[in-house]
Image: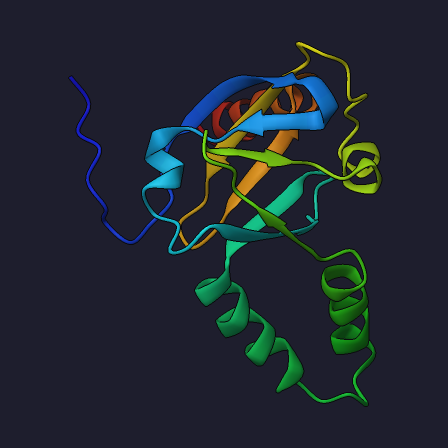
Length: 148
């Protein structure tokens, strides 16, 4: 049996289905790490959705704002992260509503029953369209095989 204790990091890979109105139930292993009942969703870098609890969002946001505005790369990162960021509530059943704009970014169609891959990445978690995640994992495997 897998233990589900709070450890301060998002771990694991889970596959859940969208329900009505673009709702997604977050796995208990993910929910237990979230302080409060809100998360920030934003465009991720590999066409996925990056998800932060408020405490970790504020830390990451402060780090981004501390970068030099005059640096082109810093402006790019700010635009990528902040322009798409939305605060969503976790309902009493542990679900979040994924906004259409972010569904589209991640290649999700918002269909009832559509499979979403939820992965822990340490200080935040990501939502992936199943085929994109599977292709990404296969690409990682190929890189590993080419090293041996």
